[in-house]
Amino acid sequence: MRKHQQKRLVPKDRMPVNLNKPQNWKADVALSVDMYNEWFMQFAPVTFRNTRLQTTKSVEAALYATGNLTDIKPATLRKHPEILSTLRMSTCPPLAVDRLIGLTGVSSSLVKRMEGEQKLPVRMLTAQVDLELAKITTIIEKMADPDIFIWLGRAHAATDAEVHRAATIVADRLCGAVANPIIRNAQEKRQLLEIKNWLEARGYKPLPGVDGTKFNAMPPGTFSFRMNVPIKLEGGGQSINIPIDAVIMPKTGKAGGLPLFFEAKSAGDFTNTNKRRKEEAVKMAQLRSTYGSAVRFNLFLCGYFDSGYLGYEAAEGIDWVWEHRIDDLALFGL
Image (tube, rainbow, N blue to C red; front, side, top):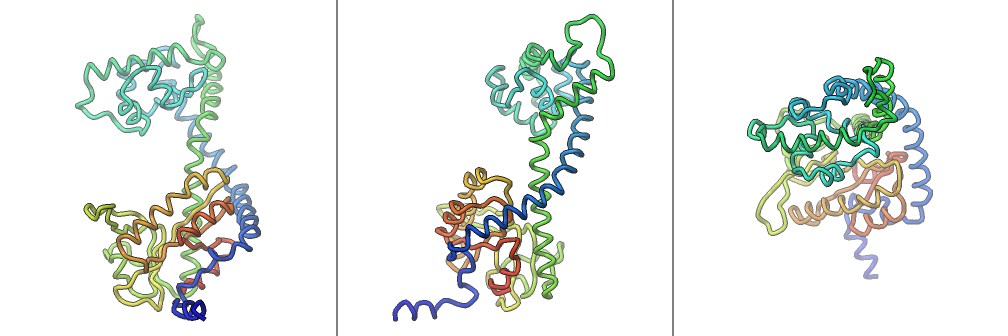
């Protein structure tokens, strides 16, 4: 009887949607994986081809700037810090960022700034920096892969065909790191478009991007993407903004009430999702700490999310909608 009374006290729009149905998880995981793989097979080959072409051109430009690896100067790295990642992939074996730092003994902040393709500030353009850059050039020249750059050490210069072939090989080494974020960003963009189409088909309106409306002042029946929500850090002192992928105020929402929060999540393998599953729990804890237990923070999932991931999120009170069953959004009161 007590259990029945407690259930009646839970508002209809707060009833769990998927987190309390573990008997359905296995089937949903399979369908979600199939959906992601179908999208990936259509999108990824085109993305990888385009990325490979663009990356090959960037590698060729880096080779040109360094005399096809025969004349790598600190001044060149100062002017073109963006070529460092290409140079790291030109060695045998290719060098990870931390390995390069360890071998050269240079400042990690300097290397990571260059890896971020940031111009070095004027205050860093000193003789000391040139000494650091010289250490990098020495390692690159010493470890340059002779099987790729076959002209190194011989009398005559590289031909155009040899340079292009070498650039293609280095580009292949770079492509995974470059293409994977592109694929993740494209998947997130596609997921948000699916949510947008679903909402607009039911009469919801996007917030104008310039009206400055705060998340807790959204009119009923509106939504916004990548909206900043302020939260207080542990200790109740400093406040920071955290971005939320989709913020939706139900049509039945009240003025000054809290909207629904959704994070668009996609994944192409099970390993990374379980490594990152704490991210959502931290965000949920921050929102609850700031705004109380009325916070409704949920996930919009497509891809490789297994029972271990789902169980972890469910234990944190985080619910979700599978993209292959997007109409479950209605069960959240939308």
